[in-house]
Length: 175
Image 1 (spheres, rainbow, N blue to C red):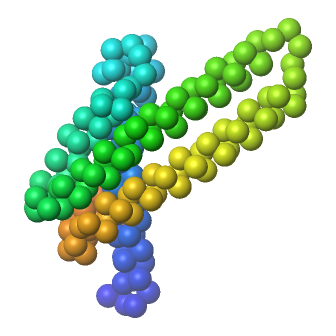
Image 2 (cartoon, rainbow, N blue to C red):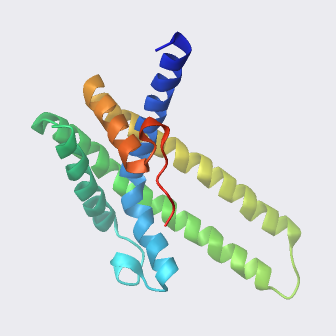
């Protein structure tokens, strides 16, 4: 393998780890909501917003499955559980803030007279929220990654490649 190809492979591996950890940390929260919107239902949270306990439970199931795949130790699991315990209530707060912005924007757009300044402020608040949420999410992902060994992170990157259908440059066909 050439030096350039090796660097490219290493970069893909790092990106894969980041993507997998992101999916791990946030997927359990976002996917049921996305599915609910697609199906017209309420997802697995029975019609209301997720509670911190529900978010933590979803993340815990995903974490257990992934940590089984990389043979994580009990000590590693305990450290990662602490990160998830911290993340869940913050994720719920960030989501509630986003819902508030969405509701505010809906009201502004439905008003008899459009207030462009207020609409712009909601947009700016949304950008700020996205920045804060991504900063927190990346912080949690890095803390989880720090608990794992380099070998475990490499295993996760390989799993991510397999799951995404991009192993050896091959993409899964769309269905």
